[in-house]
Amino acid sequence: MNTSLLYRLLDADPADGPAELLRRARACHHLPHLVLSALVRDGVRMGEPARAELRRARDRAAHYARLAAGLARATGVRAIRGLPLAGYYPDGLLRPLGTLDLVAPDEAALWQAVIRLVTDHPVEQIDVALLGDRPHHTTVTVHWPAEDPLVDPWYRVHLTTAALPGDGSAVPVRPYLVADEHVECLIALAESRLHRPALPPGPVTLLDIAGLTRRPFEPTETAAVLAAYRLAPEAATLLDAAADHLPLGPLAAVRTALAPELAPERRRRTQAAAPHLPTRRGVLLRRTAIRHSWDEARLLTLTPGTLLLTPVADYLLVPTLGTPGTRAAPATRTAALKALQHWDSRC
Image (cartoon, rainbow, N blue to C red; front, side):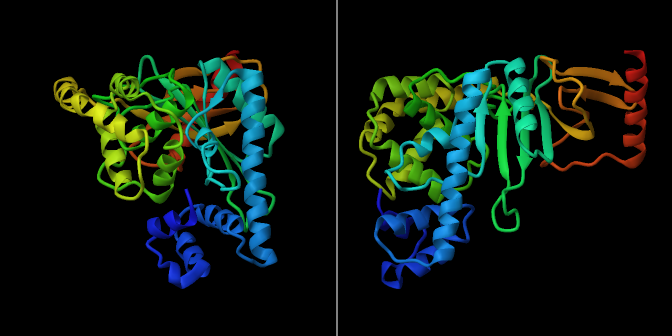
């Protein structure tokens, strides 16, 4: 993985120099930090503002790594996707880490981790959603500002009890990842294709694949694992796209071994397609610090709807197909708060 690959992925002419590469990188989320780190490795001179920006990005990545290690020891959650993938980048090359993704072994561990984050950091926003109905999986995303929030992105930690959420229909939720770490990373990259199959993989995804080409993959076993996780078509499409930009190394044999798995998986999806599983997003009603002893959240069906009481906040659950930030109508919110007050008075 070298700077010439970055020029190709960002469609920049090396003759235009590092400034043009960085200009193009700034149009992509978090890519400037990766490009700056690559230019440092190449010995390119840069001013103090650029060096300071890169230092802050490195500090952010190191902070995420410490968070993940501490939460793993204390609660059993573990990092998936971005942080493990960063470990396969060459020394000194900084993989973008906009979000720290963590998977919890169960709901109790998830809330223990959330409580620690809320206690130890100036968390200003807590997004909650439930995937599915009965049983459901829980996702929580906590946000807090960087030291200089006008310049740097907020910290964002995403915790879930479902390592692989699937597509809500034919590809089901798979709570656990059980393969070797580098195979897990390939699984996670393939999973991401479920949600944007029509879009080509972005530069960071292709760089992730480049990092994985330095790892040993057993082709037949890896293909079988991808098939078991219902991701053979996505993995094949991803590797085909990557092959247009970089040598696949041991992943070329994985792509070959995937070929017999594609038609059976596509046929299975046609036969197994089911109604889309509901996702209910929480609209914040109030923050609370009085339930930190709770191991799990509670669902209450009260007028005006379903309320979710968690160890850190209370929410009104609403079906959603959109993004976080959903708002409840003022009258609905008022009624929900009254229902909470009535529940409080009975406890």
